[in-house]
Length: 345
Image (cartoon, rainbow, N blue to C red; front, side, top):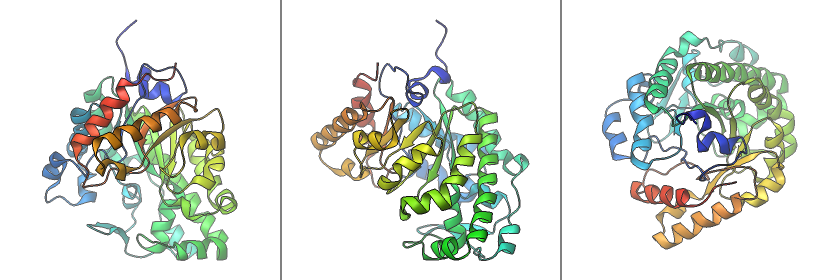
């Protein structure tokens, strides 16, 4: 047998529901947030600017792989990067998040968002190529926001607790809503295709805010657009993740991903029963568990591993992103425990 490659890594095999030597593990938001080396290289550089510097993107993406020995790297980026590249006037405000200068309200606002071309995100292509060369047998996961979450930012003008403006458009101006999501699906598809062409081994579609919807509304207003993105991507496993999605898991499974990410609220064995027996799962330790004494952390990690055995494949992860205050040494110990445990055979 030849040398291991990213394509026969434990991570890619688990995504495809194939036997693995050990359960693979990576952490959402592992690139950045809690790492002192991340804060050092980012010092004084605005978030969007940092996503546009290929060498910096590569360095930040590699930091957790070096430190933790995780089974996959995730491209350091932000879900609004392709929107900014497509000409939307926005800024990532420290402590707040993305803020949109002119929120989308009408069909003409939608029409003003231009399609994305590969040239618009040439820095992402360059960063992925640098990383693939550097990572060798460690797979790189591509990154994009899903149409609903992107639409929410654009309609609300920034982060929102209730998504009231988003839902008002969805229910009250369905034509505008679907036009917006169609345009965003096109942008997301192009953004992920650039990453696949440059060599990522898998992609994750983040629908962070979709838990705000009922299953009926998800199926009607969101699923067709996410499905178009997922079903037109070729050649790599696709992971689909949202937060607060317990009621949406059956539909998210149908939308077309190979792996469904599950937040910490739903045990993985219960999630698998909802998603169906042909999809791998990813997750789903509560990030806040990592603040507990080590014996508690270890017991919870083992519980998640045991529940993950119900699925045809399991990629260990947190149920949402790493919090900035988490001790990196605890994450390193979690990786050790996961790697000691035999994987799906």
